[in-house]
Image 1 (cartoon, rainbow, N blue to C red):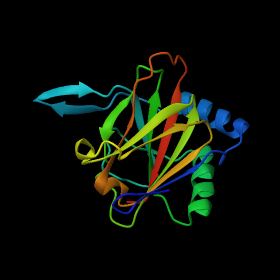
Image 2 (image 1 turned 45 degrees about the vertical axis):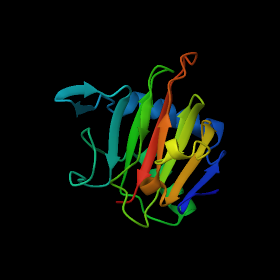
Image 3 (image 1 turned 180 degrees about the horizontal axis):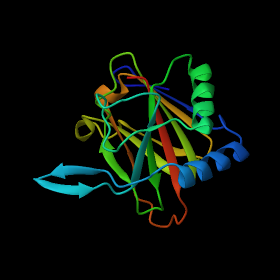
Image 4 (image 1 turned 90 degrees about the vertical axis):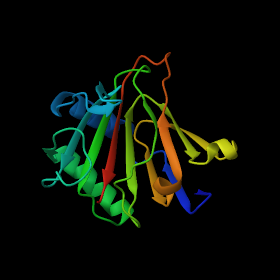
Length: 188
């Protein structure tokens, strides 16, 4: 799907089988350290409204991450290899977001560390959640908004100038009681 200002989104609902997705969900939840990240707002340290982690093939301290990084596990390395074959590129690391239930969320943001020509490959595991994109000039044109339901085992690719001109969010969904894990693979 092409969006305004050279933003490109592609959604692949069945990259992983249900069994693969369930196994990876349990692996990440049980075997990867997940903690609150913190960001500073108005001089105060605020915990993220979800749990985070990061896996990488080598030290990524020069990249954006708000949590310590850990080496790719064999299972996540297999997933990385599958994605690299599918996307025809190399990924250095993956940010991990664990939304424990519908109260956990991430507000509208863009990933400024993504360099020109690079993209994000986002894998969803667990509970289906809403994913909303809106143009950075959304207040001027409210129709510049797209929404997806990201199901377990799906892949969402954000390419082109998506990060430059668009923001994205996983909003609260208070009726959801199950967890969702999102792995965002990056090559910068």
